[in-house]
Amino acid sequence: MPEPRTFRDEPVSFVRRSGRMSEAQDRAFTDLAPHYLLDVPRAVAWTSVHPEARLDVAAEYGRDAALIVEIGSGQGHAIVAAAASRPDDDFLAVEVFRAGLARTMLDADREGAKNLRVIEANAPEVLSSYLPEAAAAETWIFFPDPWHKKKHTKRRLVRPGFADNAARALVDGGLLRLATDWEDYALQMREVLDAEPLFERAFEGEWAERFDGRVMTAFERKGIAKGRDIRDLVYRRRPRP
Image 1 (cartoon, rainbow, N blue to C red):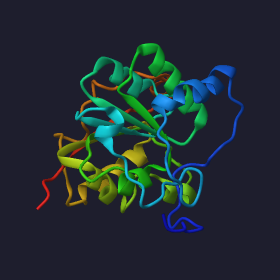
Image 2 (tube, one colour; image 1 turned 90 degrees about the horizontal axis):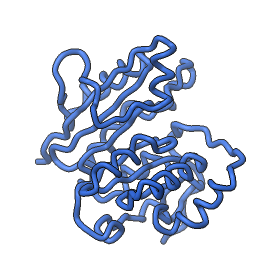
Image 3 (cartoon, one colour; image 1 turned 120 degrees about the horizontal axis):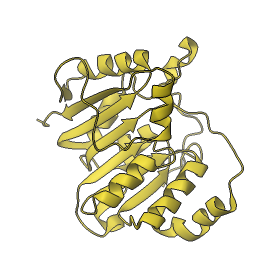
Image 4 (cartoon, rainbow, N blue to C red; image 1 turned 120 degrees about the vertical axis):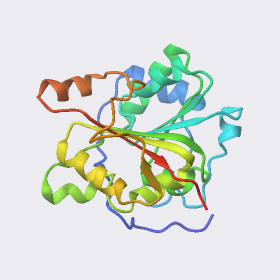
Protein backbone atom coordinates (compact mmCIF):
# COMPACT_ATOMS: atom_id res chain seq x y z
CA MET A 1 0.00 0.00 0.00
CA PRO A 2 1.18 3.61 -0.56
CA GLU A 3 2.74 5.52 2.30
CA PRO A 4 -0.03 6.99 4.53
CA ARG A 5 -0.53 10.66 5.24
CA THR A 6 0.81 12.06 8.50
CA PHE A 7 -2.27 13.97 9.68
CA ARG A 8 -6.06 13.77 9.70
CA ASP A 9 -8.13 16.21 7.67
CA GLU A 10 -11.04 16.35 10.15
CA PRO A 11 -11.31 16.48 13.94
CA VAL A 12 -12.27 13.13 15.46
CA SER A 13 -15.32 12.69 17.66
CA PHE A 14 -13.39 11.20 20.58
CA VAL A 15 -10.39 11.74 22.83
CA ARG A 16 -8.39 8.56 23.08
CA ARG A 17 -7.82 7.72 26.73
CA SER A 18 -5.46 5.13 28.12
CA GLY A 19 -6.56 3.18 31.14
CA ARG A 20 -5.58 0.10 33.07
CA MET A 21 -7.48 -2.99 31.97
CA SER A 22 -8.38 -5.92 34.18
CA GLU A 23 -6.76 -9.32 33.78
CA ALA A 24 -9.94 -10.59 32.12
CA GLN A 25 -9.89 -7.71 29.64
CA ASP A 26 -6.24 -8.38 28.85
CA ARG A 27 -7.10 -12.03 28.27
CA ALA A 28 -9.86 -11.01 25.88
CA PHE A 29 -7.28 -9.46 23.56
CA THR A 30 -5.10 -12.56 23.84
CA ASP A 31 -7.69 -15.32 23.65
CA LEU A 32 -10.75 -13.85 21.94
CA ALA A 33 -9.35 -11.27 19.54
CA PRO A 34 -8.41 -13.85 16.88
CA HIS A 35 -12.13 -14.51 16.33
CA TYR A 36 -13.75 -11.19 17.19
CA LEU A 37 -11.27 -8.36 16.49
CA LEU A 38 -10.70 -7.24 12.90
CA ASP A 39 -7.05 -6.68 12.02
CA VAL A 40 -7.12 -3.32 10.23
CA PRO A 41 -4.29 -1.75 8.20
CA ARG A 42 -3.62 1.68 9.70
CA ALA A 43 -2.92 5.06 8.15
CA VAL A 44 -2.41 8.20 10.24
CA ALA A 45 -2.97 6.94 13.78
CA TRP A 46 -3.67 3.77 15.73
CA THR A 47 -7.42 4.25 15.30
CA SER A 48 -7.17 5.15 11.62
CA VAL A 49 -7.95 2.90 8.64
CA HIS A 50 -5.74 2.84 5.59
CA PRO A 51 -7.79 4.34 2.73
CA GLU A 52 -7.12 1.32 0.49
CA ALA A 53 -8.13 -1.27 3.09
CA ARG A 54 -11.45 -3.06 2.47
CA LEU A 55 -13.43 -5.52 4.54
CA ASP A 56 -14.52 -8.71 2.77
CA VAL A 57 -17.76 -9.11 4.70
CA ALA A 58 -18.80 -12.53 3.38
CA ALA A 59 -15.33 -13.97 3.94
CA GLU A 60 -15.08 -12.57 7.47
CA TYR A 61 -18.44 -13.90 8.63
CA GLY A 62 -18.40 -17.00 6.44
CA ARG A 63 -21.80 -16.31 4.89
CA ASP A 64 -24.05 -13.74 3.24
CA ALA A 65 -26.36 -12.12 5.79
CA ALA A 66 -27.68 -8.71 6.76
CA LEU A 67 -24.96 -6.64 8.46
CA ILE A 68 -25.80 -4.28 11.31
CA VAL A 69 -23.10 -1.78 12.29
CA GLU A 70 -23.03 0.02 15.63
CA ILE A 71 -20.93 3.17 15.82
CA GLY A 72 -19.54 3.87 19.28
CA SER A 73 -20.58 0.55 20.81
CA GLY A 74 -19.13 1.37 24.24
CA GLN A 75 -19.23 -1.67 26.52
CA GLY A 76 -21.15 -3.53 23.83
CA HIS A 77 -24.34 -4.13 25.79
CA ALA A 78 -26.70 -3.21 22.95
CA ILE A 79 -24.90 -5.02 20.15
CA VAL A 80 -24.10 -8.18 22.12
CA ALA A 81 -27.76 -8.51 23.12
CA ALA A 82 -28.83 -7.96 19.51
CA ALA A 83 -26.30 -10.43 18.11
CA ALA A 84 -27.24 -13.10 20.63
CA SER A 85 -30.97 -12.74 19.88
CA ARG A 86 -30.60 -12.48 16.08
CA PRO A 87 -28.29 -15.31 14.97
CA ASP A 88 -29.34 -14.97 11.33
CA ASP A 89 -27.85 -11.45 11.12
CA ASP A 90 -24.24 -10.31 11.38
CA PHE A 91 -23.05 -7.46 13.61
CA LEU A 92 -20.04 -5.13 13.65
CA ALA A 93 -19.15 -3.01 16.69
CA VAL A 94 -17.02 0.08 15.99
CA GLU A 95 -15.27 1.51 19.05
CA VAL A 96 -11.98 3.23 19.93
CA PHE A 97 -11.73 2.39 23.64
CA ARG A 98 -9.94 -0.88 24.25
CA ALA A 99 -11.61 -1.62 27.58
CA GLY A 100 -15.00 -1.41 25.88
CA LEU A 101 -13.86 -3.70 23.08
CA ALA A 102 -12.55 -6.20 25.61
CA ARG A 103 -15.84 -6.16 27.50
CA THR A 104 -17.73 -6.65 24.24
CA MET A 105 -15.63 -9.68 23.30
CA LEU A 106 -15.98 -11.22 26.77
CA ASP A 107 -19.76 -10.80 26.78
CA ALA A 108 -20.12 -12.01 23.20
CA ASP A 109 -18.13 -15.13 24.04
CA ARG A 110 -20.25 -15.75 27.13
CA GLU A 111 -23.47 -15.36 25.11
CA GLY A 112 -22.18 -17.46 22.22
CA ALA A 113 -22.58 -14.56 19.78
CA LYS A 114 -20.21 -15.77 17.09
CA ASN A 115 -21.93 -13.50 14.53
CA LEU A 116 -20.29 -10.41 16.03
CA ARG A 117 -17.02 -8.71 15.12
CA VAL A 118 -15.39 -5.64 16.66
CA ILE A 119 -13.11 -3.03 15.13
CA GLU A 120 -10.89 -0.51 16.90
CA ALA A 121 -11.17 2.41 14.51
CA ASN A 122 -12.42 5.93 13.84
CA ALA A 123 -16.02 5.48 12.64
CA PRO A 124 -16.06 7.89 9.65
CA GLU A 125 -13.12 6.02 8.13
CA VAL A 126 -14.94 2.71 8.56
CA LEU A 127 -18.03 4.10 6.84
CA SER A 128 -16.24 6.04 4.10
CA SER A 129 -13.84 3.37 2.88
CA TYR A 130 -13.33 0.21 4.94
CA LEU A 131 -16.86 -1.10 4.53
CA PRO A 132 -17.77 -1.90 0.92
CA GLU A 133 -20.40 0.39 -0.51
CA ALA A 134 -23.94 -0.72 0.44
CA ALA A 135 -22.60 -3.32 2.89
CA ALA A 136 -24.79 -2.43 5.88
CA ALA A 137 -28.50 -3.08 6.30
CA GLU A 138 -28.58 -0.78 9.34
CA THR A 139 -26.23 1.59 11.13
CA TRP A 140 -26.80 2.39 14.80
CA ILE A 141 -25.52 5.45 16.67
CA PHE A 142 -26.73 5.31 20.25
CA PHE A 143 -25.71 8.02 22.74
CA PRO A 144 -22.63 9.38 20.96
CA ASP A 145 -20.43 11.81 22.87
CA PRO A 146 -22.48 15.06 22.89
CA TRP A 147 -19.47 17.39 23.15
CA HIS A 148 -21.83 19.76 24.89
CA LYS A 149 -19.43 22.70 25.29
CA LYS A 150 -19.95 25.12 22.41
CA LYS A 151 -16.25 25.21 21.50
CA HIS A 152 -16.24 21.41 21.15
CA THR A 153 -19.40 20.84 19.07
CA LYS A 154 -17.25 20.62 15.92
CA ARG A 155 -16.15 17.23 17.24
CA ARG A 156 -19.65 15.78 17.15
CA LEU A 157 -19.94 12.72 14.96
CA VAL A 158 -23.23 13.74 13.35
CA ARG A 159 -22.41 17.05 11.71
CA PRO A 160 -22.58 18.36 8.14
CA GLY A 161 -20.77 15.93 5.85
CA PHE A 162 -21.38 12.87 8.02
CA ALA A 163 -24.44 11.75 6.09
CA ASP A 164 -22.45 11.12 2.91
CA ASN A 165 -20.36 8.48 4.66
CA ALA A 166 -23.36 6.95 6.40
CA ALA A 167 -25.30 6.76 3.13
CA ARG A 168 -22.38 5.19 1.26
CA ALA A 169 -22.20 2.26 3.67
CA LEU A 170 -25.96 1.55 3.69
CA VAL A 171 -27.93 -0.51 1.21
CA ASP A 172 -30.78 1.23 -0.59
CA GLY A 173 -33.61 1.35 1.93
CA GLY A 174 -31.19 0.70 4.80
CA LEU A 175 -31.84 2.39 8.14
CA LEU A 176 -29.79 4.84 10.16
CA ARG A 177 -30.93 4.68 13.79
CA LEU A 178 -29.87 7.30 16.33
CA ALA A 179 -30.57 8.07 19.97
CA THR A 180 -29.31 10.71 22.38
CA ASP A 181 -30.21 12.17 25.75
CA TRP A 182 -28.92 15.66 24.84
CA GLU A 183 -31.68 17.80 23.34
CA ASP A 184 -29.44 20.17 21.39
CA TYR A 185 -27.56 17.26 19.84
CA ALA A 186 -30.85 15.59 18.91
CA LEU A 187 -31.91 18.81 17.20
CA GLN A 188 -28.59 18.99 15.36
CA MET A 189 -28.89 15.37 14.22
CA ARG A 190 -32.37 16.00 12.90
CA GLU A 191 -31.34 19.22 11.16
CA VAL A 192 -28.35 17.57 9.48
CA LEU A 193 -30.26 14.51 8.29
CA ASP A 194 -33.43 16.36 7.25
CA ALA A 195 -31.24 18.46 4.95
CA GLU A 196 -29.52 15.43 3.42
CA PRO A 197 -31.03 14.35 0.07
CA LEU A 198 -29.63 10.82 0.45
CA PHE A 199 -31.92 10.17 3.44
CA GLU A 200 -35.60 10.46 4.23
CA ARG A 201 -37.43 10.31 7.54
CA ALA A 202 -38.63 6.87 8.56
CA PHE A 203 -40.81 8.25 11.36
CA GLU A 204 -43.79 10.51 11.77
CA GLY A 205 -44.11 13.42 14.13
CA GLU A 206 -41.34 15.21 15.98
CA TRP A 207 -39.30 12.20 17.09
CA ALA A 208 -39.20 8.49 16.35
CA GLU A 209 -40.55 5.89 18.74
CA ARG A 210 -37.95 4.27 20.97
CA PHE A 211 -36.25 1.49 19.01
CA ASP A 212 -37.40 -1.72 20.67
CA GLY A 213 -34.26 -3.48 19.47
CA ARG A 214 -32.13 -1.33 21.79
CA VAL A 215 -31.72 -2.85 25.22
CA MET A 216 -31.94 -0.51 28.18
CA THR A 217 -28.39 0.11 29.35
CA ALA A 218 -26.97 1.72 32.48
CA PHE A 219 -25.96 4.69 30.32
CA GLU A 220 -29.55 5.28 29.19
CA ARG A 221 -30.87 4.84 32.73
CA LYS A 222 -28.36 7.41 33.93
CA GLY A 223 -29.63 9.98 31.44
CA ILE A 224 -33.22 9.33 32.47
CA ALA A 225 -32.29 9.60 36.16
CA LYS A 226 -30.80 13.02 35.48
CA GLY A 227 -34.12 14.13 33.97
CA ARG A 228 -33.01 14.11 30.34
CA ASP A 229 -35.44 12.93 27.69
CA ILE A 230 -34.24 10.17 25.37
CA ARG A 231 -34.85 11.10 21.73
CA ASP A 232 -34.76 8.60 18.90
CA LEU A 233 -34.44 9.24 15.17
CA VAL A 234 -34.52 6.85 12.24
CA TYR A 235 -33.76 7.66 8.60
CA ARG A 236 -34.01 5.55 5.45
CA ARG A 237 -31.35 5.57 2.77
CA ARG A 238 -32.94 6.68 -0.51
CA PRO A 239 -32.41 4.48 -3.59
CA ARG A 240 -29.30 5.13 -5.63
CA PRO A 241 -29.88 6.49 -9.15
